[in-house]
Length: 473
Ligand code: GLN
Image: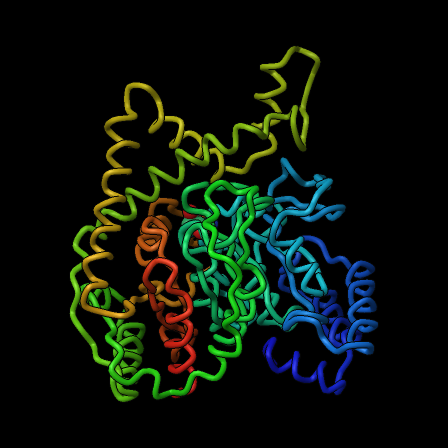
């Protein structure tokens, strides 16, 4: 059951918010997947009761009213522990709500808990969390994807209807792809980042994950509103798209131009490749036209991303110093010792690696050679997309060259892991929206899928194309 169906059932009083909440909490509490860092039982019951009163009186006030959901533990929640998957924040209880928590609360949602994630959103497997790895319930020998792995698994195991994750360079699309779910990375600047713990500020975007394209539309509708507290938030007004997206007929695909850069597909593992080819054939049979595009600068996307994201992370994470927030390790030997000890103990290896890389790229002697160059390359990548969009409505791309990675692979070679982000980081660098959709099975009988990339702020058309496609499955 997706959000839209649950909403119809709540409206018809066939089910109550408390029943839905009990079912989800039950699954969350019994879960063996380590998908949650904190489960907020009492709070969830209280939210459900409030929804129940509202619904009894006037019916659900929004699509999200009375629907249980989870939040990646990077979203600040008032009075509820928020850890970023890190030891340094393991006991941090924020005194305020960030934008996403505030909006979803106001929309009447029932928060079940905070989901596990790679520390500060750094990783692709959800094995970099201080709270331990998340298991993929489809096959425990493989990871669920990261960094929003807990979010994907919470939806897969049925402990929440949808989950809000974040996507800096693929963290919502990869777990959706590995778990056979749907997710949307919105355009950069669409949704306020206020109260979203920063990894890389020019790339971070909150991103929903759920079971249907209509779910994505419901969430985009609920979350699009200008927020002055984030200077990069674009004033777009409110949007009402859920009905429109839901009612899109399959014929919407007729004559739509889908751009494909063939080398992308050729580089995938054999079964992923054949699944992608089938998906493209499927699009054509549904009336879309496949056009060839050129994205030649994207081969530099990994190096560009890892210079920019680590540079920004090194600067963003400077605030975790043992004084302002979280863990403080001090032996009374002065400020510098406190910084050193708190950060050495509080951060995990991947976070430390990135702080070192980023500090190096930003240092006086190397700034021009690395950071500045990466920013110039980012522009060329954006320009590639701009010219591609002159001949197509959306772009079709793999999400990953393989299906879910085997457990522990990330611990062997960090650079090999970075390379696996090849398909997800380009649109993050260009600030474009991306909709990850499941399609068929690949290696090890695990789910595979693809992403449709939209024009800047072109989420409505992207979702309509996605919905039309979903209906032809
Ligand atoms: N795998 C990428 C990284 O490790 C993406 C992370 C993300 O989107 N938060 O940086």
